[in-house]
Length: 399
Image (cartoon, rainbow, N blue to C red):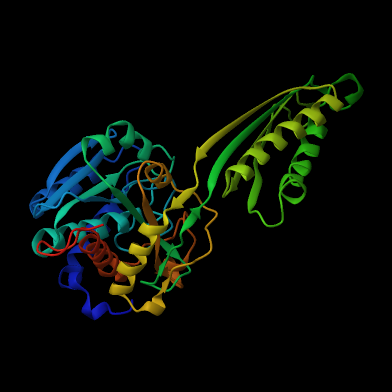
């Protein structure tokens, strides 16, 4: 069990949070098509006495709760979307929708933030405004920007913004965070190589793109090993190799797709430039036409120092200090909460999901499951952060 679980403020309705989470788990929705989840979220927020706006960024929900006369405001964000994968779970609350599964914990993120909203609405001691942000389509990296484009930070005056994600492999209810880069950027590349196909028995009569494409798969591995400093983190992965050939047909085209990640603008620029240079060199050497499409999908999730210290303090107030790693290693996965941190200062924190069973499986595994034991820990963290950042009604102004 998480540290201090018996003393958590939201433990009294742990069963209800579990029921919310499992209901969302049973009916997973993907991308922007999260209308059912959004409706459930909105209905619960209204029942707590929270002002609600729906349809933000197409299907997002924003709840607003005010206390006192304080001018300071914060935003707390949870994601609602599932993954378009088949579930391998055998639990009684497993997905009832073919080809969809909550394999990243967003169902738990939503339930924890709902728990915090309920506790703050009933018993919150703060002076200011807290915004509960429930976002669609995190997995494709489009939901945060959609809510921003729909006026998230203009329509609601939000001074700071915070996010949280469960993480497998970390003890249940422990926290991990760091100032600076918390999660990586993600870029995608698509390389098209065009030659002239023909019969497999007469390669001399073709301009075969297959061998140069194979050279490229190997050569791209030198981007990290030979073009980046050993002190810089970077990943270049080829993930697809598609041709229009067949058993006895040399192809005319080859398409190579892949993924690149890192933590700095210099690494991003170097990877993009070197991929272009390598493709050009190999294809010109073989007399082939080519094109490279390189896109920036996710930016680096960058925690700001002051807000990170506030998050560490809130986490330590909920669990033991030994259960908070305030200088964890950056994570090479990506998160579209980065877009919100480009708009406002804030911090993204991990909460341990456990180390065994379905709770310890990697994100996006078809049998992954959120750990219901940590629901009160996460909800209490949100409550502590809110009261810490907004102060008390009769307390000093928040700086």
